[in-house]
Length: 362
Image (cartoon, rainbow, N blue to C red; front, side):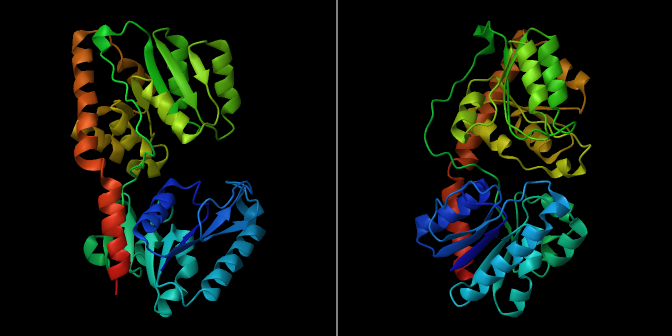
């Protein structure tokens, strides 16, 4: 049996959900210790034990008492079920540090780094874990280790699992006389996700229309104000994943910028890259980032600088035949790469390779 530990619920965490569904579909026993931080989730999956304590993201020291309760909650379940599980799958550094003593008790510990926050500590403790899991092999550079430093290394890319087939809409820009359709669906963050520049571009240039969805960083009122002043900006608020896909499917371009004012963005491995491939929609992302390198290597979108001028100049020749031809190539490359490399990713990597790793580790 494998025990997953994560400071969010299975239903909320797409990456954790894929691990759990791989266990369910292969008949691999599991249970999960999770935290319902908003106290608004039900246990959708069997064998999930949720810690119910309100602790808003970004709450800092105000969450200290809840964190102490979380510590005791995790240890209660780990000790109570000690004889049932062999592997602990620790999601992110704070969970790994909690469960390190269980290495001395002969449990196998997988260290899955979703997002790096303290690479100096991660570099040390990743060498102690039985398996280090990262979303991309280039993230080894970020953590500061090599494969030779580790007991085992395993890659699980952030490839979404799409629950149903949807009708993918392909666009021929030579035949499109409408405005340039942009979409942004995701977390709102000030200054580092290019949202200010994106909204300004659409507001000032009537060639564009923008479908935008998401919340965060108290930016909702700003987005609402732009939408009120400009009928070419439509704000959807917080949406379901199915609605998010539909919004992106109806656009020409998916915007996913990662400005390097946040140094962690250099190694961002977002779902948006794979959603772009699945939908056949070229992505607009940032130069000198991991996702930007992937886009350039596969010619599946556009990697631009971290400023307004770079975003605006991208569309300087939008109505030309050259732009339309290049757009079609990028769109086709998206679809081809999805079909050849990622359409069966869940079955090959999660249900097969990952489950084999769990079952065979000494």
